[in-house]
Length: 128
Image (tube, rainbow, N blue to C red; front, top):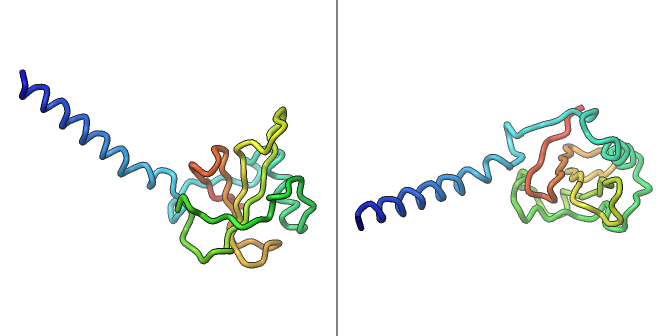
């Protein structure tokens, strides 16, 4: 009986470790990451992408601020490389969870932009 209980604990622990070990790969936005076409963004996201290229105006004060990539899901770059922008969610009276994070040192001409609809838990590369 004790051996069976111990075996169950070992199997559960190994399963948890395996899932945790895979989680960053599943959400990381490095090479081979999930992508989406610009037209696949919500309408509000497409509008934000247009504003990014125009240099604004932006709806929220935090838009255009440095994104620290603390989650380390985006490719590693120097601080100041990434900037975040809010994608408004209809019906909410706050910023919500949707963001576009763009990388590059010329904000109007980003090198790469990523979309997250779950407040930085996962990203998809936006492709033209």
